[in-house]
Length: 115
Image (cartoon, rainbow, N blue to C red; front, side, top):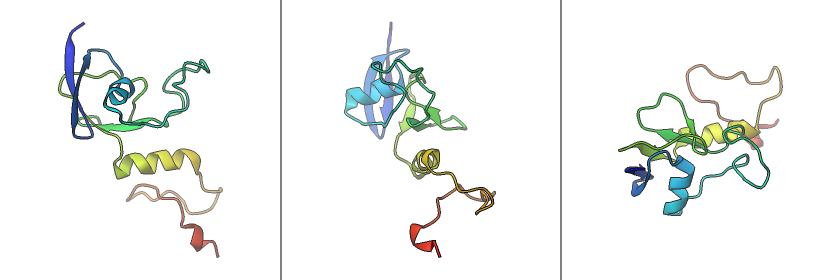
């Protein structure tokens, strides 16, 4: 296979075409959180969505463990959008409490505002 150059968090790496974003990030020493991408547990990669990343030119966030890299791809692993999405995976507001705003990304309620 041919080598492609990918930029992850402003650092470039050359990897084989078809390598996942997660594998390319590991080569740079960039840690992306995962749950389902462990070979030891035998789950299908991409199922948990914990490894979401922002890829330039893509409309939605992408799972790093299942998305293959392409030549010139620019990936960001720790933007505010990514952090909010990962946080939302673990926190869902109780039914009837603070509906999802339509004008901005969802932010979990402040723990000190529980009065």
